[in-house]
Length: 348
Image (tube, rainbow, N blue to C red; front, top):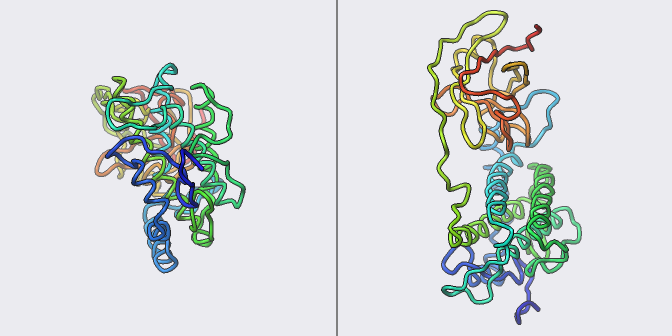
């Protein structure tokens, strides 16, 4: 019994609504919980097999093979993990942006009866992350996530730690999904009758739903969500032609993409082809006094969290980045710095 209503098995049993007309108000969340057709439609046996085939085929096209020695993540898991990582970063940044003294804030001007405070929203999402992925692992999920669950966190610092732990746990479980286990039965009080694949996609939706609600909370406090802020752009210095010598190619950093810290370079596809570097290969880049092993991929999903990846965004030059981390901070590189790319690390 939560707020006078009986909690039903299914997505977000006992979940309260926050933003009327926005993503996931109380009526829509209650319909998602109470409607058998919607609960069953998460992944039905017939459609699920077709969905698995589509995921596997699309992911194989998107994600090239990794270099030997790197953590192996199945392309299906990588496809979902890319979306999950995006909402993780946006949600954590949003929660960090709200001042600690405003974690007790909740809207009152409008139809906001019985809504959660900002802090309660954050705690609900963290608890539900643990719940969904505990059900995938056939573990007992935390009780009462609709009202925050059993975790004792109350302050902003405590809630931020809990939130980060929940996303980290979810990410670890998500990355174990393969085409062979994607349709394994999974679920319970929170996920309803479902599958591993169904619960992972449901988790993306749930975090995104509450992110949309909390955007309103921030803006009502005159705070622009970090993901919506204009991205400052460093002026690009004049580029020079690639020089091939010393067993590699010399280029430069043309721009540091702020605030993410990705490095735009002067290298073009033909430069790497000339070095014998193809998609999926690992190669080395030296900047200042540091050398990094990088995978040439197609996007961030080609590598695990914190690892280095390089790719060509559309027709543009090579971009060097770290998944969910700053390449500029790790390397110390700035616009105009010289880069040396090679198949083998350069020995001074």
